[in-house]
Image (tube, rainbow, N blue to C red; front, side, top):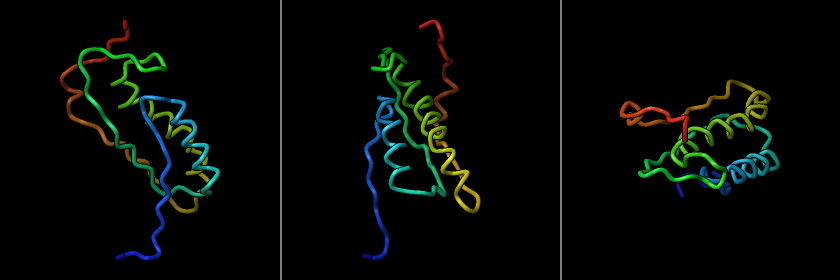
Length: 104
């Protein structure tokens, strides 16, 4: 009511499934020709180890890989947007409590 001209466009994206990240980017590009601001703001903390359907640790995929992939897939749209587009990736301070285990 406060912004009657505002438009909301809802698209599905699940960071636990990289296929949906790719589909989101494809659908977004089909609907929009500009992207001024991208906010990557999703995060989980899981114990014990759970593997995503893509074969990665679900926490690592949700908190990092999916954000990187989405940004990469939308980068050309941002570069072609007049003005200065921005990417903000929100994180947690919990990363100080551990490290990356590449042996899993």
